Length: 174
Image (cartoon, rainbow, N blue to C red):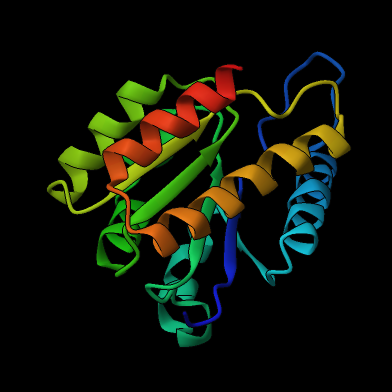
């Protein structure tokens, strides 16, 4: 099997009046556990920003264009990213069929429905709930690694996407 890269979208979050880490700090913390997960899975991790202004640049840079063998992971806090046409055009254009969504508050069923509608059911979504808790990077990295390893296992064993999503959902709740 060709070598798989891990492509990680990092949503830096929003600043509020309440004291919380800045967007840059949040992005760095999320990058930390995603990078650790990639190291644990022995896969290179490439970070793509969720900054809307950067999407056109990503589209033009072929080096960052995902290949079918790549693993695409996103850390999304809500559905608003999928309402942005630049982003949805990108994910629909890519040949990759899997989008692993780590953490965030959006319901998995809602997200799957959104992606199905946007991409004419050409892709399916893995959701692993709430790995981002109290900045516990070790636990988060472990949870992301499970997703990466599970994707590679699914590809190697040729089980159906539905069987895989069902199994991963059960594992996440365990």
